[in-house]
Length: 72
Image (cartoon, rainbow, N blue to C red; front, side):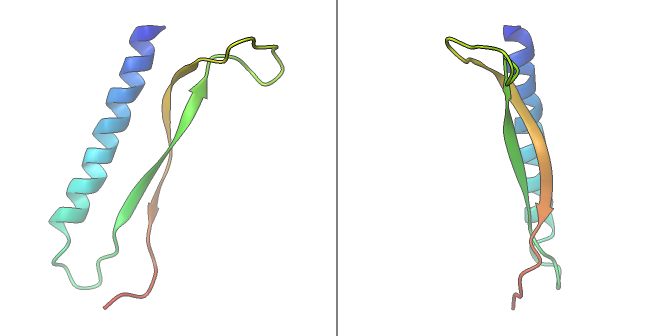
């Protein structure tokens, strides 16, 4: 279980690095809008189980969101 937890963290960091590098690479492109990665927790127990101490079991990518607000 601990290997899986650390693996999900590495995958999340890889995704965040990919999104950040895409933002940096396209920063000078006219009309480019930056993206952000949203992450969520993976819980060790389901909501229906009684948990005396809930310990997280990793992180998951919820979505990569592109910002569409008006810019210069």
